[in-house]
Amino acid sequence: MQVQEKLSQQSTARTLPFGEKSLLFAPMEGITDIHYRETILENYPEWDFVSTDFLRAPSVGPYPPKHVLKHYGKSSYEDLEKRRKTIYQMLTTEDALTEDTVSKIRGFGFKWLDLNLGCPSKTVCKHRGGSFLLSELKALRKVIRTIRSNFPETFTAKIRVGYKDDTLFKDILMLLEDEGVDAITIHARTRDEMYKGVAKWEYVKTAVETVKTPIVGNGDIWTVDDIKKYFEYTKCHSVMIARGALKTPWLARLYKDGQQDNQALRVQEIQRYFNSYFQRIDKLDMEELKKIRRLKAISRYIFDDLDDGDQKKRAFLLSKTREQMFGVLESL
Ligand SMILES: Cc1cc2nc3c(=O)[nH]c(=O)nc-3n(C[C@H](O)[C@H](O)[C@H](O)COP(=O)(O)O)c2cc1C
Image 1 (cartoon, rainbow, N blue to C red):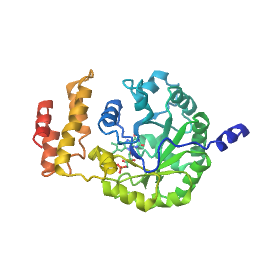
Image 2 (cartoon, protein in one colour; image 1 turned 90 degrees about the horizontal axis):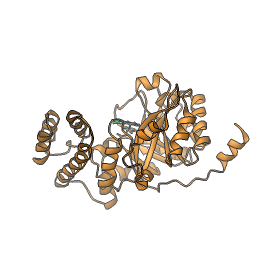
Image 3 (cartoon, protein in one colour; image 1 turned 90 degrees about the vertical axis):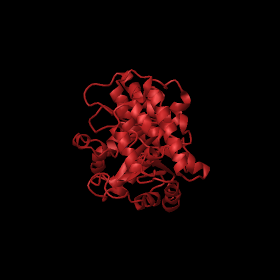
């Protein structure tokens, strides 16, 4: 490493933009686009941050800047508060145009860049990106170094505990710490486990005991009690929630207000949430069928805890028109 680069890494006593026990709304490809994130930020501002899904760095030919902006979404780019509360996620490989992509993200003023090192997709891993990098530490170091030296603001990595198994887990943590990553989010499963079983919270506890870098716990946090137990058990800095946040988008508010969920509240919030999201996407130049598909995509876990939830979910998913869908929602 060049001396200057090393110096710049050593002098980085960066302040994290999020305090302890922050609640982060996880990136979800196909869900967390600008319209969805705006719905969350406006209706459920108790989430400390939301995240874009991943922008894949190109391997041939740099992206035009507008592509990097489009990934964030233009509609609320000018809204500084929304931008401040958004993590920009990217995915890259050893040979991709990492430096160029990072510089463009930085050029648009994004203050928090997250590297996706957890994606289990066969295509992504075949191209040596996402969780694959957890098995190739030399390539991983190179990628992290490139990003770190081109992004002086908050740079975090979102990992799994390994690729095929967890043997490199501690090495990965130490590598990320060594290279000056500001925080590490851990989805406590290996890549090969995909979504099997329940994420093992022990890994997050181990990580907290292994490195000084703040650890963000992720994986199978569904309820207010889970959040409390998670903080108590793992002592992690913050948590990130994906499926639990899709199931209960108002979860951050429940946690912060010390409330518990209940049926009446669920019904009221589900109606509010779908109405708000639909009003937003209804303004877009988008085919009706696509709008309906989007509503179905965000409904994945939301009916689960309702009385007769299975039946209501089925009726919602079988709906062919907006009238039918909102009919189901009104009769919850
Ligand atoms: C539909 C879906 C899409 C996802 N897309 C991304 C993504 O773009 N980037 C990422 O880092 N993780 C992605 N993930 C993983 C989640 O962010 C999270 O790490 C994982 O679901 C475990 O957390 P959970 O148990 O709270 O769901 C996705 C998960 C789901 C369910």
